[in-house]
View (cartoon, helix red, strand yellow):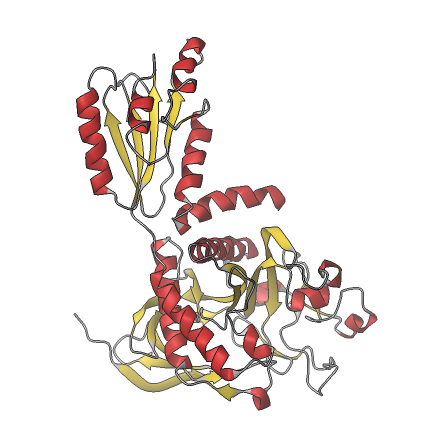
Length: 445
C-alpha cells in the first residue's frame, strides 16, 4: 500500500487549522488542527486550549466515520495523526450551512419573536431549520472561480466595532437572486437596510450543484447526529457545516465537524460545546467539556440489527423493506403451527446472531399461531401482519386476542408495519432514525 507523505506545501492556514498537501497524492490534503479557540471573529479574543487540537481531531474523525457508515458523502478519509486527518482535496463552496433544531444564537437576534421566557427551554422546530450564510472575509466575497467580488459588505459596520459585517444571511436561498442581510439584526429593523446587497447564486454554487442538493445532505447529517447524540441523552441544538467539490465533481461534507461546529446540551440543559467559551466560562470547564465530547463521540456507531421477515407459508408475500445501514434483512418461511420446534430453534439462532437486537414481522395467512408463539419467547418486538385480512377478516382475531404474557402487536397495513419496525430500530440506529425523521419532517416543509 502506498504510504502517504505529508508535503511541506501549506495550502492555506486559518484561525484554527492548517491545510497541508500530500506529496504523492495531489487529490488529497491533510488538515491539521490547532490549539486556538476563537469567538466573535475577533483575533484579540482568541485563546489557547491545551489538547484542543487532539480533541478537535478525534471528534471530527469519529463524526465523519459515523456519517460514512450512514452513506453520507464526506471528504474525510481517515485519521493521520493525533492532530491531523486525511481528506479528499476539495474546492470549497463559499457558504456556511446551518441546521437548527432549537431557536438559539444568531437566529434569535434575527427573529426575537421566538425568544422564550427566562427559565424555559428554547423553542424546538419540528423540522430542522435550514439556513445559508455567504462566507466573506472583511466584507470581501470570492466567487466559485476564485475571483474577488470586492467589499460587497464594506459599508456595513458592526455596532460595537469598526469592521464590515461578515457572513451575511441569505434570507431566501431558493430565489434566483440572493438578497444579503445582517446576520444579527431582525429583518424588519431599519438598520438592516444598511446591508442592501444581492448576489447571483450561480457565481457561488458549483456547476450542476443546487441549493436542494446542499439542503438534502444537511438534513441527513443533522438527523444522523441527532440520533447518535440521543443515545447518550444529549440534545443536539444546532450545527454549522461546510461543503466542497472533489476532483470527481462530487458534493461532499468537508472541513471539520467538532465541538466548535455545534451546540449540544445534556439532559439538564447544561452546555457542552464552544458556547461556553462565547459565554466566558472558566477555561478549565470548557476544556473538560471538550474532552468529554471527544470521548463520547468515539462511541458513535451504526449497530448491527436484524429486520426479520417471517411468514408461515410461501403463499404469503413479504412486505417491501428499505435498505438501512446496519440493518440486515432476514427472510424465513416456517409455520408456527406445523413446525413449532423448528421455529424455536430458528428464533434462538437469530437471537444469537444479532445481540444488538432487531424486529420481527410475522406475515401470517390463516389462523395466527406463528406471531403469538414467537412473541411469547423473545423480548424483541414482534409485529403481525394478517395476510388474509381482506379476504378472511375473521382471521384477524387470532392476532388481536393474544393470551396473557404474549406482547404481540398487530398492524393491518404492511407499509405501516414496516414503518413501525423502523421506528423501533431507530431508537438505537442513527441511520434508521435519519430515514424515518426525513419523512416525518417533510410534513413541515
